[in-house]
Amino acid sequence: MLDACHRYFHAAADVLGLSDRVRTILITPRRVVKVELVTEGDDGLLQHHLGFRVQHNDSRGPFKGGLRYHPTMDEDHAAALANLMTWKTAIVNVPFGGAKGGINCDPSALSKSELSSITRAFVDQMQGLIGPTLDIPAPDVNTNSEVMSWIMDQYSRREGFSPGVVTGKPVHLFGSDGREEATGRGVMYAAREALKRQGRALADVSVAIQGYGNVGSHAARLMAEQGARIVAVADHAGAVHDPKGLDNEALGRWVREHRTVAGYPDAESFDGGEITTWSADVLVPAALEDAITVDNAAGVRASLIVEAANGPTTPAASEVLHERGVQIVPDILANAGGVTVSYFEWAQNIQQFRWELDRVVDELEKVMVKAYADVHDEAERLGVDLRTAAFAVGIRRVLQAATSRNALRHSIDIN
Ligand code: NAD
Image 1 (spheres, rainbow, N blue to C red):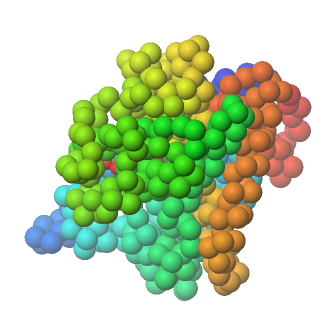
Image 2 (spheres, helix red, strand yellow):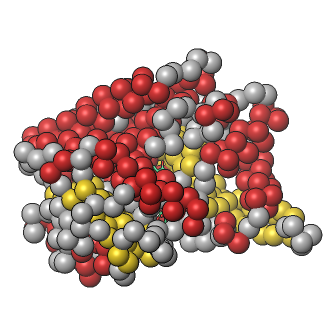
């Protein structure tokens, strides 16, 4: 995935005319942290995990990015995702840089108290490196508001009351109304803005979604509220479809109880591997990376892909899709609603002032509409696809900030 990020970065850097020296400075993480986490399991035996945090760039503000708990988590993974965060925060113009991290664990094999101990050990090891003005973690795959509460608690034990050290907290513990569904809501706005420029609306389209976790389930519900028909949904354990449109409320209830869409009784089952080539106008990959590769790109039947997940399309697949005229709204734009409301949460924490949900939703819509327009206009101006344009917008803003702060000694002329 790191290779893919670098290829997308260089495509935009080519268009911007950046020198090799500037590329190296922008692409290299400021700090890479790897920590050993030794904790006691419920059986009294020692458990051993590795924690990672890659702090990629802080030219525009404190490092910001999620924490992922997954057996495949490693340094390269964190580096790739941190890199994306740097451009993403710049595209939505929130005052943060980019970071990402996680722990190489399988949360499904751990009890809640074991997960809490591992999380707290990670916070201790990150002492002096995370904080409300340094680096602010957030939820990602397999982490949630409860994990964020543990982080806030552990950090506050040493540093005093510090809700701004982490975002995605429960609403009753200084979280923000609207944060949980923010990424899905942003995906809905991105899809709406893309369709609008094609003369279509969400009410005109059918949608297939891969992944029905935080992002996928809220995106499904919110797109359906705008009239879209969610015709197929797949997750790690199964897939269901209904050409008339799935009942998202009922499916959501089923998933909350059974933790998967598999077995949902009011729709037909199918092989989840077919979701990316399902017959639908819009495809929303909202699971993990590399969902769309050269092996299935030729079979994609959607005319619009809205990348809710990070890195769901490989560069080779992107080329195939581009040649076939399939439009892709890239991850660093499409899923930026989460970090945007994370910024609102952090701002509320810093000010000790709570926003109403209506305000969060209004401000998020404004940010997403502006970000989409900025990227769309850049694509038209430079004659490139939306992904290259999104990277170009992000890179330019980071470069301007770095130059003004003298992090890069000479000002740099860019296209
Ligand atoms: P989640 O853990 O809540 O949900 C992940 C979903 O993907 C689950 O439904 C799971 O069953 C499904 N899945 C896993 N492996 C699969 C497979 N092989 N095939 C089909 N489905 C599979 O995670 P999330 O928070 O919804 O994140 C999903 C994606 O969105 C990730 O790429 C994440 O980095 C990205 N993202 C999340 C946020 C956020 O605010 N949560 C913000 C930006 C980007």
